[in-house]
Length: 334
Image (tube, helix red, strand yellow):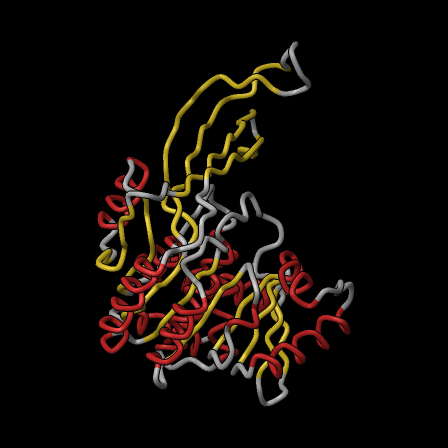
């Protein structure tokens, strides 16, 4: 416990280059009053509407909230959502020098309609995505790789957040990997994990790992086989498979395996962005000198905190420290 607590203050000032797909998350919140006569759906009485930076912006926000300095690299459209997204990131102190505006693209917007009911945490009813599916053109890719070339040498680590929106293309991955030059380089991917060979840490959730491998992983033995296979095939220092309420499993190049039970299974209100928190905290911890096992344990604690909050949420050094102390006291008490 004391070793974990000693690592947290060392998050401060760490410069992390965050590369990935940006989006603006929009929330429309209403109170459920009755069922509609037109369809079997609730009628919501409007309460509020707000937006939050999402996708790759979320690990950047987590880094910033934990005392680090995030340098954001991504693409937005020349539209109002893009301007709102950039402003919100800058208001949090994130360096947006690598956020490129492209007038021919639209900014990805994910709209969630959320229903409130008495004594119940708000529940998401539906999500509507507006996303430009066109591939990044050569000019955009050149701008991205040019910024990465300038920013990587003054960064402590590189974090890629792949939401399959086109930014984390092979050219960008190759540039990031070459420029990491001994630095920590991590990735959280919803897509093809095999693009990320030789990385320090490759993170995937269980469903995504199953999709990449083309088979289900129904039990502990199958997860272990999959993790060990991925470490070898990716030539990664470590692979992390997050498993929701079943915690997360870490597999390292030396053959070691660590399973970390979920830090919080009883107060889970919204899992949106929890994986972003995991990769952000793990990356900060590795920069701060933590072992891979310590980094994943800290990330697990942080994920247990953000799932208690609505939407893309962040945590702080103080909250993280209190969580570690509380769980330690509970363990001693039992």
